[in-house]
Length: 117
Figure (cartoon, rainbow, N blue to C red):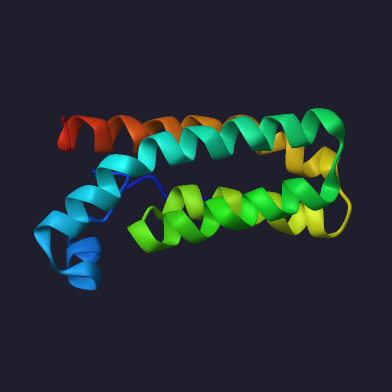
C-alpha cells in the first residue's frame, strides 16, 4: 500500500537537487499539473476503450513523471496499474484508476498552490 505519511505529495528538495536551477524547476513544476491532467484524461479513455497497451503506456508515463518529482504515492499507484495492464488484467488495473486520479489531483493541487502564476 502506498505511503501517505509525507506532509507534501511532492519531494521539492529532490527536484531542486536533480534540476538545480530555480527557473527550470519553476518551469517544470508549474507545467506538470496540466500535463498530468492530460495524461489522466488519456488513461481514462484508454480504460473505456479497453486498450491494454494504451493503459500500460500511459500508466508507465505517469509513473516516470511522478518518480522524477519524488511523488512516491502517485508513482506507486501508477506502477500497480502498469503491472496489471502488462499482464492483461484491466479489471485489477481499473480498481486503482480512482486512486491514481485522487493522488494526481493532490499532486496537481499542491503544485498549483506552490507555483501560482
